[in-house]
Image (cartoon, rainbow, N blue to C red):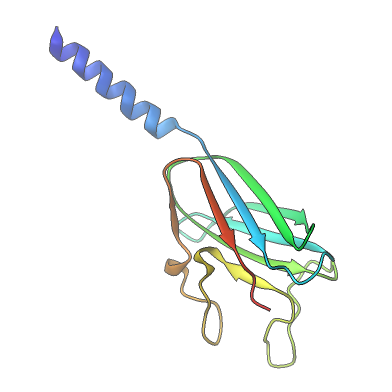
Length: 134
C-alpha cells in the first residue's frame, strides 16, 4: 500500500513537471531610438523557429512576453527594424546598420555567434535582459 502511494506521488510529480507551462519575459534595453519595431525569433535546440514576435519600442526599450513554454533549452535572435521594412539593414560589406542581438548577449566575430552559445535553459518562469549591438 505504501509503495502504491509513493509510486502515485512520483508519477504525479513527473507528469506535472512535464506538462508545466512557463513564461519567458524578454527585456531589450539600450535601443538607440523609439522608431520602428523589434523583430524577435525564439528557437528550440534544433534551431527550429517556434515563435516570432514583433513589438514596439518605448523609452528606448522593448518588453516581450512569451507564454506556454515547456522546460528545456531555447535561443533568441532579434533586430531593431527602425525603418519598418521587415529586414535587417546592412552596409556594403554586410555589417548590420540596425541594432541586433542574441540571447546571452553573445557577440559573433565576422558573423553570428555559434548557435550553441545562444542557448539558455527554462525550468520555470524566467526573465532575460538583452542589449542590442549597433
